[in-house]
Image 1: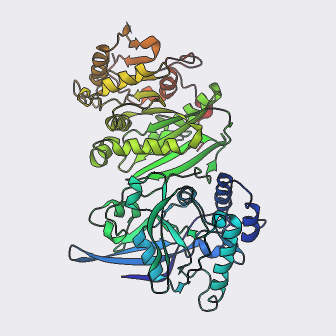
Image 2: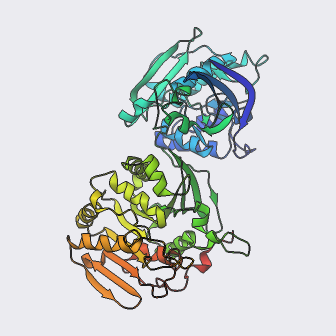
Length: 570
């Protein structure tokens, strides 16, 4: 059972520029571009707001199903038509690849529909256009044929404008690019479905026979907002689709865990700040938000170094990035300053483009997230792969790191594979190795990875938390804190290669493999809580350069904060 209402969900895009080309002129401008350039041009045009006004108001589509004897109702908010470039008077329904569609969907917090959603949209649409297939030919994947079909559809739509103005939900004139459970076993494919005839039967059953780069005139991209209502309560489409009990509301294929395609072009609508940084927000199922911070204009010839920083327990991404601390501010904005330390590193190490992806999970606890959602590590492995693919052919060097409970994400990643990939250049634990477990073969996996290349580095920062006092009491067990876990790591790795030890009243330093493995263990004669101090006092900088000529140049670990000039004012 489906129905459409007149309510709409607004999306956020810049106003359409007064100088923006109409749909026909834009389509003609991309006619001779190669595929990748054409796709990027469409995404760029969308991002700058060259979108018809009518397309910006999403329409509510209601779906219902009886589950466990109770009728449940889902409200989805869908684009009134397929993705369009141009104005109300002159728009181009642009066929695009699923990768570009995903990048655009990420821009406005949307996803692509399931087969059941497409059926619901067609049933709910007041305007049902008759499919108008063109004779198959080699030209069906070219822009002139896209325009030819666009004109045919526009002519049909014009006949209904008096009764149903633009912005009314319309369907039937394109096949939909959809998400499907079958994509999990069909890497590199596009799933298409629909193009309903007047009798309600689709011309195109669910089909995955084309590679993901295949885009012909009949393809349309209908975006659906991630926000859905279940019996009036707000949630996300991903959460519903992953739920074995609720998934039937939105999917006729059972639970759906893969709800995204790999973006062909990383999302391009992002803010820049006074430090000329670009930030893009991504969402991963389940309940993970990622902010990717990169130089606003990275040099194309520079290698990319992608740091995956899993957040400490209880902190948001914004607190972890940090800002200039003012009276009355939340103290958590002043305990890490990963943003400022990153800017210091960019200034001192310009030979590469340093990109930091901040990973935050709902509940702000990676150990809890791992226990609930990722006991075998497969989701963590998938997230790393997805973030790696954001950079396409640039082949970034990856760094896995994090503070506090963020180390749990790194260990979840290790649990999910037998061998650490070669493009992981560095693994660093910033007082975060609580989840180290020899029974999970963590030490042997790390040793194999370290021995595989002289470009692999391991850094462990910890302090003597076993004797630290909080409100006059100890708060970690003998073996449970990072001091105990670091001693266990050292003992286990020490059976696989020799360590040199240097110690004084303040430090234990353990080094192996010519400096590529370093443990910095802070003694704690005053029994202080140094958990965040280790990071704040240049700890992130230190973790990223140990074992290289940049170690201890221009900064001192546990010394004054060298990054003060790089702290953002707000």
